[in-house]
Image 1 (tube, one colour):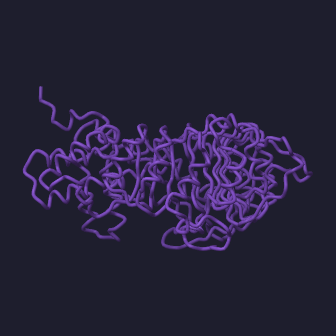
Image 2 (tube, rainbow, N blue to C red):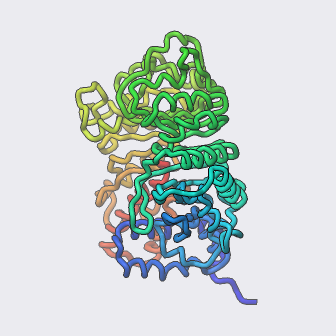
Image 3 (cartoon, rainbow, N blue to C red):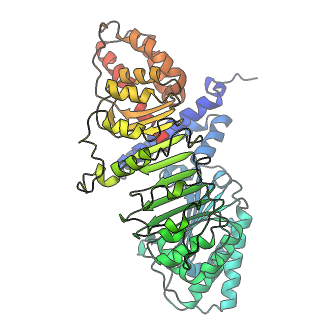
Length: 552
């Protein structure tokens, strides 16, 4: 019996780390290649390295082929199928790509669906036997088709749409999330803007497609242009949703009604608003209070700075009694800062707010987020609004990062949840760590994730944080070009010093910096030159940059 190669004996987590590093390197290289054919050919030549054994192949399929695309041309004929567009060289690899895809994307014109062209293609070989058993998400990108008249009868249109949807559910029976999108698309080199003409045939197609999709999948995301057509005409058929992403860009009143009529069943609501008053989500047209008994995640991206109308008539009412995650975007849109938190003391776990001085003072004054009032609160993310970060709107009374004293920004942030079991913090102050700031961080012994994207953190600062925060497992910051030698350490003793102090970090950060640890061990086993010493120190502080996926 042939002996196993060293690669075949690697544990699964090591294989996953190698594949993950390979994917990240290729994604970065392709983003910089700008159509460099030689580079793309070089990348393609490296791919067989991942096909060395069954364990590698299984990880590659599960991690790389996450999506599968079926694209129809303007006449409804299939002309592209494939996977992950950022790595086109993988499309030529043999393997069950569609069997492991977690997302199925179909780009097609409404005309191709209701005229039966799409169904004709999907019913022929090889697509009639296609299956996507792992797919949970269906994305349908609707684009404009030919402008010539169709002779298809309305009854046939309904039947063609029904067969199209039936093929989707048979091919991907586990889909529970639908994204119905539109936008600028290029087919056969021509661009089509999906400003739909709502004539009767297309309206029938949309109506039946929406009914069929929302009847089976209760998690749906609407693109703004599709919504402009659907919300107005077919709102009554969109009911009993549990997951809804929509916006107020078009038909604001109808969109509010769409949200309210699904209030009894919604568990997730993500809405983008251009309106200065969005109190309509919890107040009906007749002024009645609207409750969302099962809503656990509320994401409001409020683009236009404004406030909701006073809600004093609802004193004591709890609009979201099951709320666990609250995320607000550019602005906090509520006139009564506490209205969303009434009755959520026992449920709120995740808080994401734009940090303004007035909001911070209000929350601190009312003691909103203490451990006693919110025992389940674990994740607190407080960011300055995007206008502050870009230097705009300086006169709005918002927190000015550069105008605060050294520990002031951190203290303002920490005081929001002085007793909560905070596990994740974003810190935007663009300075090095100082003892006052370190002491503030050290109060949060439960902290697991610390993200400081504007702060230059040396390896010595990182070690200090790790010692102060026993639960810390992920740390993200910028790295300086070269750290100075620590006091009392000569250049000859630098490597032993780094290795001895690096080891406790390696235990908790092995997944993120495993390859760096490997490099350190290799350097440890042979004679190291002066230039390599500098390279090692540079490398040692880069682990924070590589752990950027913790920001998700």
